[in-house]
Length: 72
Image 1: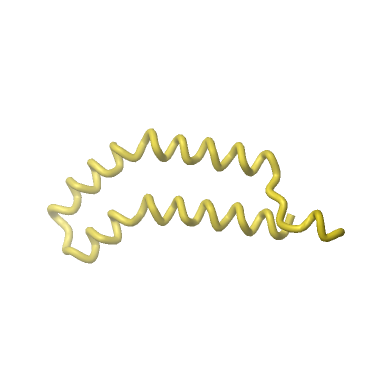
Image 2: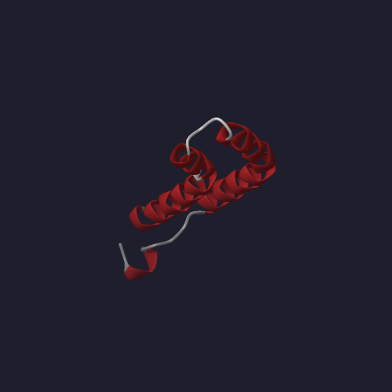
């Protein structure tokens, strides 16, 4: 493996990340509406964890692509 091959993102990874981000963007309003309804019955910490679910999924997706690029 030469130095030029390290940390390259595959085209399929880019397509999958783009499709996932578009899907998250399309579904996010419904998810956040459901989170707002659930926060009324949850304690503050559980409501915070529920509200952070979607942003944490997006961060996990970016980390996953980075790991795939480094190992691939």
